[in-house]
Length: 327
Image 1: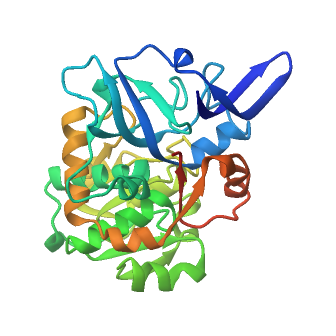
Image 2: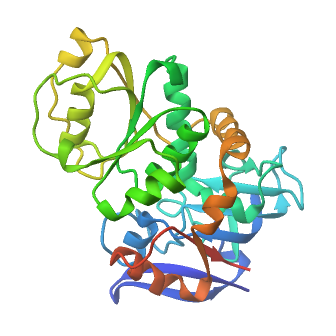
């Protein structure tokens, strides 16, 4: 038997329970693991508290990230006692996830824990850090270097934004951080390494098709009018990596930045990211991320507290990363 947080939705209604399950109840995939740590992401909290259409089938074990030790494998790449991590692939939404003591998943979804990171550190990074690294790599692929000029990061106080600011700063970029909380300015500049901070309200309202050129590139996790204004103020031949939709799914933009300034808009998806690129991103995270910094910004809680912590997260009572100890 093992413990798992289980979401059920039937004639008794939608509910999340901490339950004892047997291994025979696990999905029939080719790798089984004992989970060491998972995380509590915003998407997990929405699912646990029934605040959005996250879960596609029931019953469901939430948890979009986890790390653990292989206990059984029918997959050629994985052997017993290997340590592996998983983010994305619909786990916690369409496939049973990591807020449990055991998981059964496809070996194709797993990647090695980088030698420079501990299992706990991988969960301090999680999907947010992976997405940020994929965005940085997308900018690099388009030829963006520090000499080109500053890089804007929207949603800079959030998970993806914080990792983006830190990574870009450590790679030598001047970073303009866009945030809605004035109290975060010291954190963004003196802790994460931003060069300057602007109020997100500068970008949040409808704007002009073209604006004064302000940044060579940008990482945007907000979407909607913010992304439109980011594009409008991007320098000639600049690049914008879009990875989120906090403000909305719409893009009320003009073609002007693309055809008059040669701006490139590139999309970044960490959920279905191909495994080779995913592995490369994790290796880069192990090389460049200030893990000591983000370890200080994490809180470890037991699995038994995950349900309440999900509610706290949605109510804005949590700052930083929540790691769930599933052992």
